[in-house]
Image (cartoon, rainbow, N blue to C red):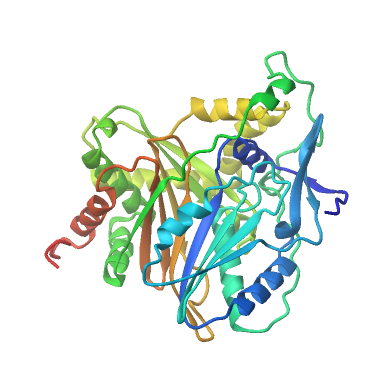
Length: 419
């Protein structure tokens, strides 16, 4: 491996998830399922073109004493590819879980891995990535280009590395660390922190009909809110109905907010998101539509430069002094969340790539503690897929979500069981 000069320091979001990844697996993962006949050689060629286009794929992380972790360019390493047969017995969600078994650690190795399930007339490609290099929307961009390269021979235009979110928002990122304060952890203690080998979480999903997907969007328009607001209100109500421990004060929900459009970086493959934190008192009676509106308005706060800067500043301040893995884990433990909702929106671009047709996108991220419910939503070809990831999922949560969405958005429809 050839180490060149540093490309740039990690931004605060990148450095934080880099620290966490060294203790437990926090990778981002995306699975694309396609119909159409392909060969392994086509996918191998597509991945070579993908690596040629996106700088992040050839980046690695290095860290030295009293210097911020930094990206450097590596040469001579292809994207790791594991090819397996796709049969009627293949459980795609189980393959996603298996892809999460190995942490990316300190980022010194390839930041992207591919697990290809290849069938006669269909395939599923699973991209798993170090979260300091890619977020979920970034992986959607990689999936779109990969399918384009599989379907057609075309030479990509190399893209520069995505700037850090700190740089985009105008936060100063110091190249070095301030002297460690007296409360900082002893660097030698870091050596005594083994990687926590956790079993991958359970993964389940439902795919809504085109009728239901359109109804959610239309109902949101009628009520002056957003589809995301409806989904969040639904998840809260379904969670309260599914689990006793959700019937409490101060239930916390975290919502990652894609802010690429704010900086005209729609095709960026790096980390370009903020987070909105909501606290709900589920013991108090709440109106469904009031909750939906509150969620929609709260997310808007992060979609401005000032709101995003305020959102990032506490994390930047935390990292202004050199921090250890233990300190980052302690910060995460101090601010737990019960629910994370990531709405990836509509797949950007066509769903047909030559003879290939994209049938489903399944994002998978494990975001929190043992009882955290991580819910992801992605819409492909006007059909919404809802994914639940948790080591301990609430009983029947997805079926309760589907029933509640029907009650809210299709009030005159029959129930799911009656269909």
